[in-house]
Amino acid sequence: MKILVVGSGGREHVLVWKLSQSPLVEKVFCAPGNAGTALDAENLNIPADDVMRLAKFAKDNRIDLTVVGPEAPLVAGIVDEFRRKSMNVFGPTAAAARLEGSKVFTKKLLRKANIPTATFAVFSRMPEAMQYLEDCEEQPLVVKADGLAAGKGVFVCANLAEARTAVKSVLQDRTFGEAGSQVVIEECLVGQEASILALVDGDIIVPLDVAQDHKRAYDHDRGPNTGGMGAYCPAPLVTPTIMDEIIRRILIPTIHTMKVEGCPFSGVLYAGIMLTAHGPKVLEYNVRFGDPEAQPVLMRLRSDLAHILFLAATGRLAELESLDWDPRPAVCVVMASEGYPGDYAKGRAITGIQEADALADTKVFHAGTAIRHGEVVNTGGRVLGVTALGDTIAEAKQNAYAAVDKIRWQGGWCRTDISDKALV
Ligand code: AMP
Ligand code: GLY
Image 1 (tube, rainbow, N blue to C red):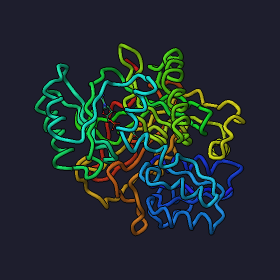
Image 2 (image 1 turned 45 degrees about the vertical axis):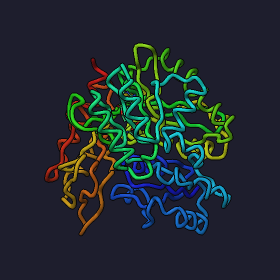
Image 3 (image 1 turned 135 degrees about the vertical axis):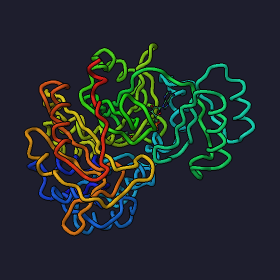
Image 4 (image 1 turned 120 degrees about the vertical axis):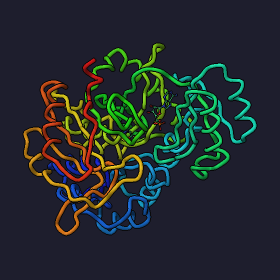
């Protein structure tokens, strides 16, 4: 098989790395990729959102399977375009990608299917939204822009004043443009969060081992939200009983309802779940592998990823034998640029990646990197996902940080407590 992976982050590096290990795979391309994917695949100078050029490349080069990493091309309809051209592609159609592209769509679907989630209301006009805030007795509240907002459209508001500011920013100031033409105001849920990733082919659901992300920038979950500063897998806080409940009350009714609504879901359904005192509830859906969750999850997967994704993309997941997992846990520590998640400094040379990669059961996945004048430099906010296996979560953590210690660049930093939530 010839495979095209679309995207340029850590998630895409682990996808490329894992796919290229398959005996079924002859060649992997990555568009546009990063300095890490360049080692395991051939990078293409095509942006991830240039659907037409990607489709042309895939057609001209007889690509057997395209795997789409990020949400933006999915929401824009890359899967529809590839299918129109009779090409195999792993991911949801634009209609199904609304599960990530529109929080209003998702909340209404959850309500209709009676799936546990935070209570909510939707507004498109300021006066009604403001009146609703005044009438809300419960605080805090969460305010969300409807559409894609690069992870910045969610405001967890401690009091009424913050909620007013958030609604104004979304609906009136249009900070997120059209993504803010509607706003969701919802109940704030309390508990631990877990990332449930499942492979879906329209009908069949194959849950992957559970991961936990660390969204806040700094240790002990302080500081602003980020794309994710580290993750580990498996996450023992989701017991088999809780997982059964998530499958029964959340994943199955979601996939069933999508089919009934005429937009069957295929690809990765990523449920962001809050484990509340009243059971697991949906915080949000994503329609792709999580980043950084994909790094520890796929590092543990022993089964052939190319085979699995090909079956999913062609509606044949029923043929899949059970997945084979490395029993050892994996921990991924994200190393970030100085200033991230705000403005950050770029173009600084990174040393020590090879030494870190040479450690046993360790892999450095690249995210925001490029090669300049023969050196690896940082080009993004999240730069590397240093991932290691260990006999226990504590050991995997120790191994991941031992690898982090080998890597240096000016201003590079990371959280020091990734996976500690599993140990409490
Ligand atoms: P999202 O962009 O929808 O993934 O939301 C980002 C983060 O905001 C989530 O990972 C949660 O930490 C937080 N969040 C979203 N919705 C809620 C909610 N209803 N209650 C509490 N926290 C929330
Ligand atoms: N790690 C969170 C996400 O991929 O959306």
